Length: 80
Image (cartoon, rainbow, N blue to C red; front, side, top):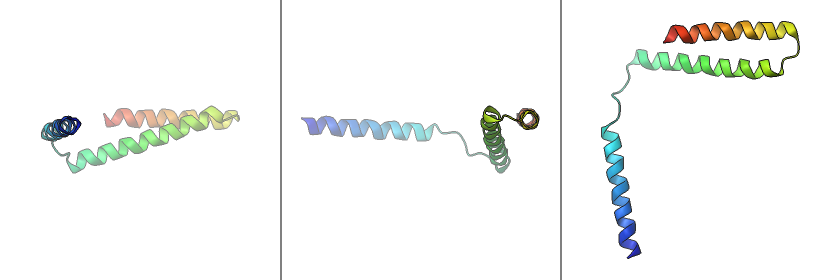
C-alpha cells in the first residue's frame, strides 16, 4: 500500500512539473538579459557599499561611500 501511495505522489509531482513548465514566461531578448545583468551588477555594488558604510569610521570615507550610494541608486532608477 505504501508503494502505491508513493507512485501517486510521484505522478502528482510530475504533473505539477509539466504544468509549471508550460506556464513559463517567454524567453527574454538579449537586451532584456543585458539590462538584468547590469541591474544585478549595480545591486551587488550597492550591497558592498552599504556593508562598507556600516563599518566606515573616517568621515571622508563615509561621505565618499554615501555619494557612491546615491549614484548607484540613480543608475537603478534609470534602468526601470
